[in-house]
Image (cartoon, rainbow, N blue to C red):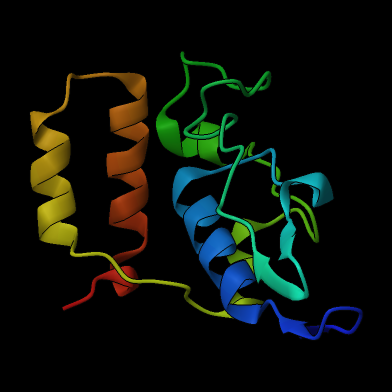
Length: 131
């Protein structure tokens, strides 16, 4: 995939973004949250930014009386389709995680809904394990 105006291939950039969004359930990845930076004649992908509506934190349709798995079903992905998994499948993995280290890190974090959601998400995607 090329942005023909600046000759920049953004495929790896989109792979990383959509992998992260799938894991974190980011519902706010609209086209204004995808960016290219210019410095003189050189173009490069912007750092990944604006992940605020993630881990079910600001989703208006979340009902915490329901289990996490039910709330996850209510997540609507953006910008290209309503499914994080479909965008991930189309673009492919942008990175892999050391799942054991991620789980150990999460266990040390304060118990919260966000922690529970992230733990649930890591269990859903064992194929992202770097091992």
